[in-house]
Length: 307
Image (tube, rainbow, N blue to C red):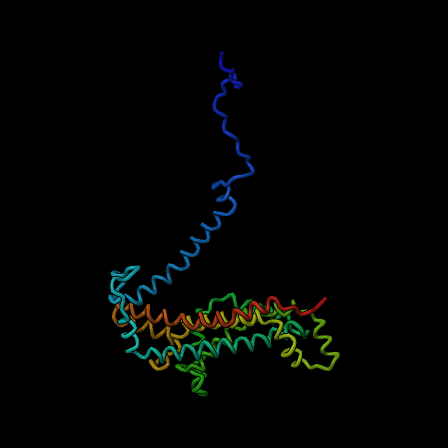
C-alpha cells in the first residue's frame, strides 16, 4: 500500500521581502530634515552662549589667576580670587554701581513714560520736530560727546558741587539725559497701540490726564516698562567710558572702573580676581531679569479692551 501523496506538490522558494510602505516607519534622514536640524542649531547656540559664562566661572575659581594657565575645569578649585578681590573696596564699588544703575533705570522709566505719553496722546506745535530731533541725536555715538560732557560737568561742579565731576549724582544725570531719546521712541510706539477710546472714556467720566496716565495707561504698558528698566540697568552697570572720565577717586569708583584699574595695576596678571568680580556683577542682572520676567509675561497677555 503506497503512502498518500503530499498535498503540497509544488516546491515554493523563500518568500520575497515585504516592501515597507513609504509613509510608515522611522527614518533618520526624514526626522533630521524636519526636526533634527533644529536641535543641532539649538545645541550650537547654547554652546556659543554658555561657553563664555563657563569660562568666567572657571577662571573665578582657578587659583593661578593667569590666562595662560587657564583650564576649563580647574585641577584644584579655590576661592582665593574672591579673597584677593575682597581685600580691595570691592563692596564699595558694588554699592556705587547698584546705586547708579538702580536710580538710572527707575528714573529713565519714569521720565521716558512721561515724555512718551505726551508725544503719543497730545498734539502741540513742534511735536514732529522734537521727535525727529530725538531720533537724530541717537545716531551719534555717545563717546563722541565725552569731551563736551567733561567740560559741562566741570562747569556744573563750580556752582553745584553735588552734581559735578566725581559724583554719583552727576553720573546718574548723564545717564538720564542720554537714555531719553531712543527709549522715548520705543515707548511711544507701545503707547500708540493702546486704544485712545480708553482715554476718551475716562475723560468723559471726569478723569484728569494724571489719572488716565497712572491708573489706565501705565498698567497696560507694563512689558515695555520692564524691558526699558532692564536695558537701562544693564547699560548703566556695564558702561566704562563715561564712568572712567567722570569718576576720579577710589571711593566713587563703580565696578567697571574699579575692576579695570585693579587689573591694570599688575599689568593684567589679576584676571582671576577680575573674573570673580565679573561673576558677582552678573548676579544683580540675573535677579532683576527673573523679577521682571513675570511682568513682561503678564503684560503681554493682558487685554485692554474686551470686544
